[in-house]
Structures are given as structure tokens and as C-alpha cells.
Length: 135
Image (cartoon, rainbow, N blue to C red; front, side, top):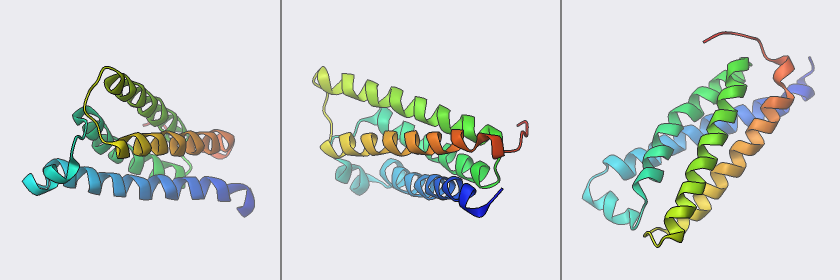
């Protein structure tokens, strides 16, 4: 187990953790920040906003689990990717049927999907170096 071999996993874990903290902060501010924050959101799509806020806690948990190299964190990362992809597809349907939305949501959801795809790939590649610990 060399430092270089685990550097990718550590970077992915830190990205997941930081991404989660930022997601909780921004989502919480948008959801609970009052009229001023809601006005700044524009045409935010509620189910996307709520998913991202709740998922932020899973991001933090996955990041901590990956730092500690727990095998369940690999599967949590894949679950986050699956959920994010499902919400992105649902958001796409919402847009296609004429629902109001903000263009920044397209970019944000695309970024989230790519980030979690990369984290999941890195986590899967390092799965054999993770400890099996039941939740």
C-alpha cells in the first residue's frame, strides 16, 4: 500500500467531503434563507434543490468513509451517482415539458453527475484497498 497508489482515493474523498459541505451550505441557504434567498434562486426546481441539499449529507458521509477507506463508502458513492443521474434525467424531462428552470441548474447538475462519476470510478478502482466494515 503506497502513498501514490492511495493518493487518488484521498483526493476523491476530499473532493466529496468539500463538495458535500458546500452543497449543504448553498442548499440550506437557498431553502431556508428567507424571501431574499428565494428571490435570488429565480426559477429553481424544488425537487432538484431538495435532492441536492439532502444528498450533500450523503456526500460528506461518503467522503469521510472514503478517507477511512471503508468499503461501504464505495457503494454509497455509486448510489449518489445513480441518484444524481436519476434527478438529472427527471430535470431534463421537466425542462422538455416546458417547466421553468434556471440555466445554472443544467450546469450544476451536469457537474455533480461528472464529479460523482469520477469519484465512483476512483473508489471502485481502490475498492480492494478498502476495509469491509458493515454499517
